[in-house]
Amino acid sequence: MIRALGNFFSKIAKRWIPDAFVFAIILTIIVFALGMIIQGSSFMEMTTYWGGGMWDLLGFSMQMVLVLVLGSALAISKPVHRAMVAIAKVANTPGKAIVIITVVALVANYLNWGFGLIVSAILAKEIAKNSKGIHYPLLVASAYSGFIIWHSGLSASIQLTVAAKNPVMEKFGEGAIIPTSQTLFSAQTLIIAAVMLVSIPVINMLMHPKKKEEIYEVDPAIFVDDSYEDEVKPRKEMTPAEKQENSIVLALIIAVVGVIYSVMYFVKGGSLGLNIVIFIFLALGLLFHKTPIAYVKAINKSVTTAGGIVLQFPFYAGIMGMMVKSGLAATFSNWFVSISTPQTFPFFTYLSAGLVNMFVPSGGGQWAVQGPIMMPAAKALGVSYAQTASAIAWGDAWTNMLQPFWALPLLAVAKLNIKDIMGYTTVILLWAGLITSLGLLLI
Image (cartoon, rainbow, N blue to C red; front, side, top):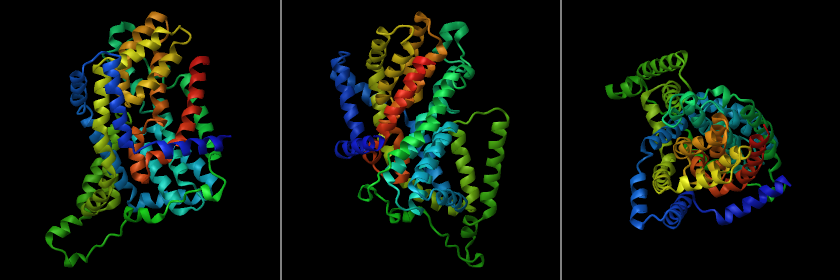
């Protein structure tokens, strides 16, 4: 049954799902129209919201470009490449490959979502290059399915936001800070995450096609530019400039200082955020490539994978601008609040967050939109702030399996299109939706 579902949704996706950029354009048009129809905003107002909002994610877009480019450059270094090949050799059958990549993706995304997206994509590529008989679109979809768990992990933006002083929660006095013991490390979150960790690898494995004609094996030739052999002339033949470019000492100084800083950062209590992941990628990249010029070559090879982010992130920022400034996001959220009871409020909060996430695919953006609406409603209904914050977070994570925004970095590394994997991630969407719904209603 699970295999049939995977095949069914995969066929639909391949036929009807366009390129991720076209998907972003369609979402833009839908939100533009809904803002005028539902909110009564004028054409010029929606145009202003869209154009003005397009630049709200520039800083975040640069972070994502750096995660992708520096992560990819690190991956093609010899030490990391050898490690990936070693893991790939263990994943030498379709069943093993799907289970291993899913577990790695789930664990890595639990630690940090930026790290998880890149590492799982790189491993999927190495498995495909070194093993036969594996359906590559499902392998990449399995790598992306690990992203479902990120908002219950150590880089969960909403739970970490409410665990410190923030403008939304400061209005509630004693409830201004919600410790992670009530959110990330609550029984509810831990049980839901554990069930996903155990079940999703099995779900993915069961979706693997049996018929040989249904299996798409990637041609290793498409990854021919992903690695290179350093061509270094004898040092006595180098010019002074070339000696500096090929200086192990120069690279080592920066790498060692970078590693020392990273260690000090965590010793002083720093959390595993996106910026420190980027910094670690940079330091290790220099260390593993050994010379400045070798690292430059690796960056130049890796930067070509960032095109999707550069093009599409401004469009999603524009969609966020229209959703927030027109009041459309608030309207969606308030409708779910209006039909809620104290018992069903977390579940309907979860559903509303899942809907809003399709148009505002950002944990921080999700909280900015829904926090000011859901938290006062939770207080009025007598529902705990912690459970409400967790419901928003799970709703944000759940529909990422249908929203291609976060798949872009992974797909860039894997060299696939969103329609190649969305059929399989839709099955994970349905399964994760069932697990999280039951968890929010019963635990």
